[in-house]
Picture 1: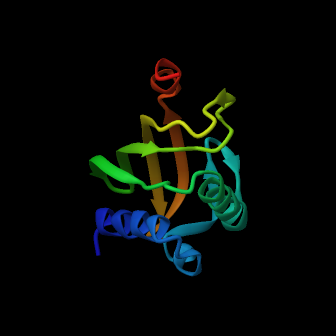
Picture 2: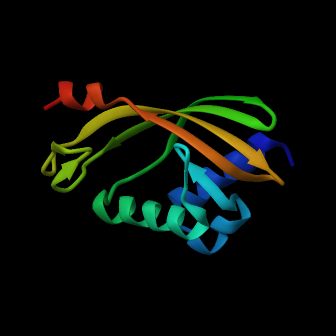
Picture 3: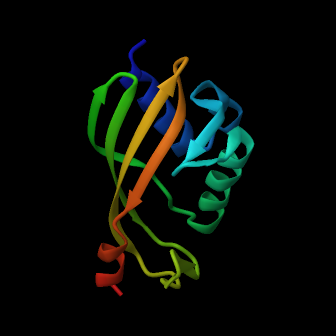
Length: 125
């Protein structure tokens, strides 16, 4: 299985909220934007996102692989409750992208570096 196959499996795991399988894709010692989250902390972050954004769906727009790294542009079109990234969304639908880089170790995601296009969200408010 290639690193892109693993990544697509990871995205399917997220979209299906299949938390029992997350450990197959995410390393126990995962770091998010330089901070150690660990698998349990990473899962808690994702579960919170799905609680706060009922229509959350990760849509791969661009995927580039240079193992052990992957670069992906994810597109989002959803309706967060209340505030989102400190912005008063309050149930309005917003569209934006995330540019995210992953480093794999032992066929699982070990490092995640994410940049959200917050300016695109602000422009829609």
